[in-house]
Length: 232
Ligand code: BG6
Ligand code: MG
Image (cartoon, rainbow, N blue to C red):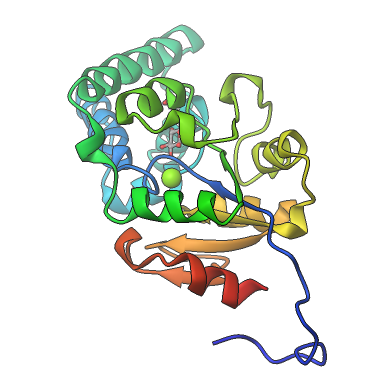
């Protein structure tokens, strides 16, 4: 699996210092709740929206998600700014209602063990989510203390595929991007990781432009040793 390069005889080309995780769809299945909430908004406003279209929304901010739905429907001009703000607020209200039921049982399979082992091996851990609800989701899941740094989406100006949120994590962890691995379920996220100068692990990514460096079909397949062997 490990790529052969002229350097491969050397001890290691990179020392991996940190794992940086997306939240929705990687640590927990809230990606499904985002979909359900947007689906309700689309139905209410007579807009087309399906799971395929939803792939484009994964990883991008709340407001950019609405703009993408409107673009798909060529309906950007149909609503004024006030109505758009209202739609975004409504979507978040529906989404937060769905969040009320989540507990540590909603952590995706294999994630807890993976985080524990990564910590025991001395890796730094961070969360790079576009979600302004990340803090409350992590609290509900009960895994906040595991992370050395959690990016605040409210402080990030540019949404994925821009690398800003990943670079913010690297800076705050005090590590260089090339020694960090990013974990993502979205195409926008994989692009953001690449643009940050990091390498990527994909979780069931529907690839349209850029494939993850190391793809997995589900979180239950994640293995710390395998990830380190692949990248180091
Ligand atoms: C990302 C999700 O993690 O967060 C997107 O993949 C979502 O679907 C984005 O739009 C913003 O989330 P929130 O909770 O701030 O609306
Ligand atoms: Mg995601």
